[in-house]
Image (cartoon, rainbow, N blue to C red; front, side):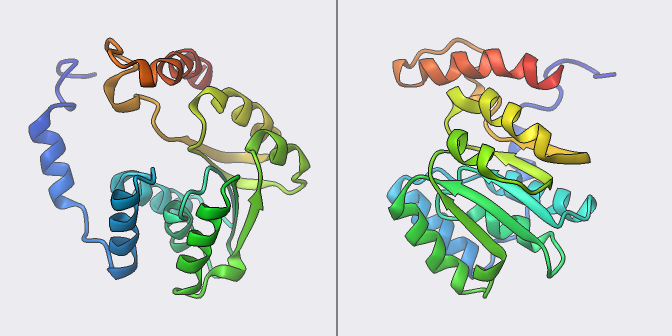
Length: 196
């Protein structure tokens, strides 16, 4: 039982947790800098590490990712998998795919990544394999569709991880930004569906 509702999510706890995260290696640091400079949305460091830890904990050998961007999460997923582990990742952007491929060649993991160019709602139904882990981090308004299409392809005991469910605090609070209004409302509808 929680000691109090706001016992964890306070600035000093967040700063403490951020301070104990391991330092990113040279490749990840470069990707983080590229993402910041070019305004490419990638998973936060703690989310990416959580993916890696979860993949290792469940002995994942096949993962599906909706929303690759530059491949930051893919690298973390593969670091948590055995050498024969593989990630199928989906992204519609030629620019993001080219950037990700450049990053994948450096640690020599390119052959372990299957990049599907397109929109996840179109691509997922075409996939025939079973996955141990599904990571959803793409168009927020489409999360329910990704989940519904992915669940039949998830092995019994598999894990689904969705990023941005609190959407920077907007989902639980008042959304003051028109820019995020549609995504915020979509996540407010998705969250109860996901946890039930």
